[in-house]
Image 1 (cartoon, rainbow, N blue to C red):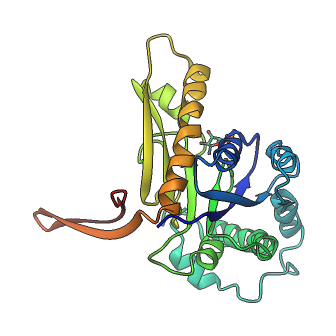
Image 2: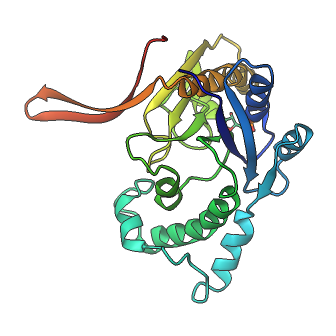
Length: 266
Ligand code: GRF
C-alpha cells in the first residue's frame, strides 16, 4: 500500500533536482511531501526554491566548521558519542594506504558538522533523506544515525554518471573526457563508500558526435529530473528491498554485494 512519505533533502547548490522533486510532490505525481531542505552552503540557490514553496530550511556551514577545527583541533567540540575507532573501521571513502591523520581529520570534522545536521533535522519526522546535489560525503557517523534499521536504508543520492563508472565529483566531465558514447545518471542508497551504495535506478542517453560537456550536462540533468522522483515513488510504494547476494565465480573467486530488488507493482 502506498503512503505519503515525508522527505527531507540536503543540497549544496542550484537545486534543480530539488525543484523536480518539489514539483512531483505538489503535482501528486509521487506520494511524497517535502518536510525540510538543509544545506552545507549558506549561499545555495536551492534554499530560495524551498522558501518559495514554504518548506522549512536550515544551513550547517561545513566550511566554517572545518576551518574552526583546523584553527584549534585540541579544543574542538566532538559529539559525546564520537567513536574514532568505530568510524575508522567502517568508513570506505579512503583507500587503506591513506595516511591516518588525514582520515582522522576527515572523520572528526564530519562528525562535528554532521551532529549539527542531525540536530537541525531532529525536529522533523522524515521517512527518507535525499541528497540532491549535496557535495559532501557523509561519514558513518551520520549514516548510522539515520539508517537505524540496517536492512532498510533510507538515504538516497543522485549521481551524474552510470555507476559504477565515474564515482566522484565530476561524473559528466569524466564521461565526456573518457569519450563515452552513452551518458547517464544513477540514484542509489548511500553506504560508507563514495557513490558505491546499492543502485535503485538509472537512466541513459546517447552522446552524439559533436556533443560537448555542456550538452552532456544538460541532457543528463533532464534525465535526473525524471529519475529522482521515480525512485522516490518506488520507495513510497514500499517496493525497494536491499538483499545481500553472493556469486561463486570459480577458482575460489566470489563476489558479494548488496543490491536493490524492485518488487512488481500491486
Ligand atoms: C547534479 O548533476 C547531481 O547529479 C550532482 O550534482 C548536480 C546537482 O544539480 N550530484 P542541482 O543542484 O540539482 O541543480
